[in-house]
Length: 618
Image (tube, rainbow, N blue to C red; front, side, top):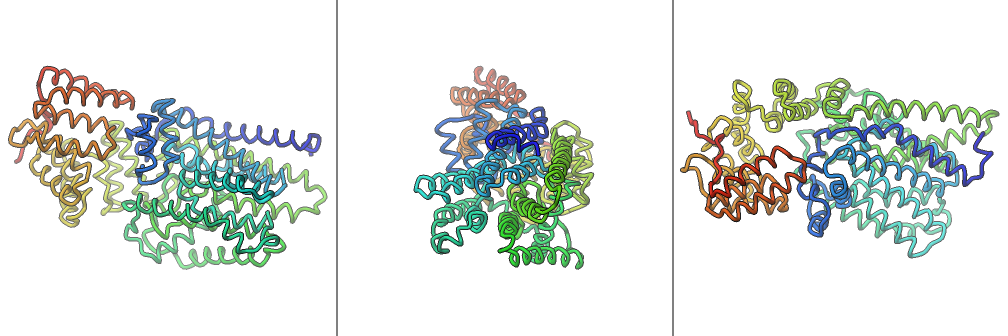
């Protein structure tokens, strides 16, 4: 084996260089990729707080507010830093994610090597982690910055814990706790860190044989307390996202069992990977659920029965099982049945179990080193090629969604997301076709027409109005439905009816920013004087802007129009100028041009009138 010619230090340097090269060969292509317009708008370029970069106010906001239905302030700050340095250029945001993933892989190697003392086994496990095709979603999707960032801090936690276990000190313990805290503040999925630390205490640290169980549990309490606080914050942040979607508890249990089996299959055979896997509409066939359950029970039994002979099986298997618990779907967030991104850290455990088991079982083979090198090379090259191919689908929405639809069936969510993207590109007919496909798959889908503003003219708009009219009738407390129906009614010039819908939404939730913004715009800019109410427009717009953190360019436009309607032209000019600056910072040239146009009017003491709000109430 060529590595034996070098000192151990040199071998480790070569391993680090090889890991770095592998990551950049596979994922370096993402530096040329665009936004995929799927969650990344919420995380980055449509968030005024994020795009405005670092400030004391924004940093405080990151820790005191929810962002994209999550509380992950460290991730939010990382996006802010990117915007501070690069603006909203997607390629450089991708570049940052690859850098962080590279660092995560390097630190993971050091952590595993420190924990086990097995340098080359640790190197192979890390290589699989770094370039497995399942990593494409976490690395190539800007919205999943939280994955790579939490992965880096998770690896730092393992490294620090290894140091602490080897030589206990308060400083080493606090370093591990701090790294774990940063990881949990990057992605709440790391609430499982206390459990993983107990597993590595069992093996490879063998602390269960040296120390009392009670002391091992007590030292995890600070980790557990922080995890509990993060879990509470996550539930509060995602209260609007947590939804059973009509999926019964038995179905969710079945899907969880099958998902574990799917993740194992994807580890070994990573084909037909997609950004969104549709949730099953009915129970699985008996043989499917029975087979998956039997597999999980058998593997758990093997890990327990052979825990003394092969302790790495126990740690690796339950690392995999335990880390997936928060995202396995018993508490459902979103419509996905399972997700590639959820495997980012859990599969490290099962990979450790497999690699160590193979090494132990082949220990007496005559040519095991030569065979091992060849086998590892084949695996790494194959995985790298597959991962490069998978990452390429993340180039833009026009490559991501057709691939997703090609490898999944009955995927209404993918049709809807693709329709939204197509509409943004001005490809209206294609957008409508995919919106209809989504509706055919799931007629009750809440976003089929709401997220795709099909309202141009002709039949599609009429269909949308009929759909949402029935929806608000059947779901009178659905705030989003009232807001969406109002937008569609405006497109039919039924502005009074639209106002009624938004007033209803505001009555259901006086802090609903969408209703506040829509009403303020109509009250400030409607051509019909009977619809205008400047005083109320100012009140609503000021409240909406405050709720949005004071940095939304769209809401600055609304508030400026409201000030102009009440004759406060100096305030209108100052507000529009701030909005112009925010639009420029976001790279929204079209909106910036709109601000320039209305500023000219306000300087001439002329309020703005929106011709699209002309009444046509037939």
